[in-house]
Image (tube, rainbow, N blue to C red; front, side, top):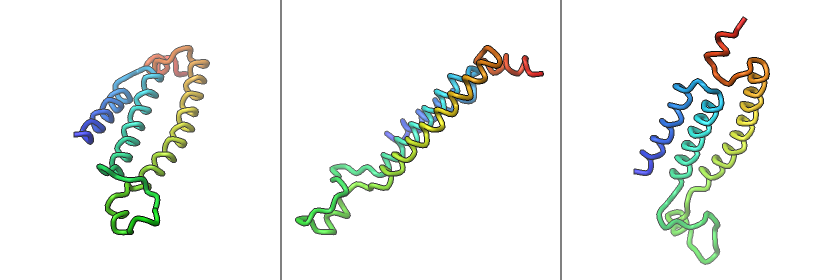
Length: 115
């Protein structure tokens, strides 16, 4: 069920990217898509009643393997958040420059003003 909600969140972001004409709304759609993928990756490593992936001396390795959550998706999501912040700042900077040049955030107006 939760995976379908991630897919629904992704489709909402995809709708924002493909159907909206405002650059700010397109950027928000891309962010929603990114967050849905991050949520999906975290859910892949989640385990019910899981323990932190820290080896303790009192615990056997077999118990650790079957109870610990997977730390790899967590590391991938942390990396993805940092990369997403860089991409977001680049998109905002480009949209500000487009607004300075054309005076609007509407893509159809920018196409009409193209020389």
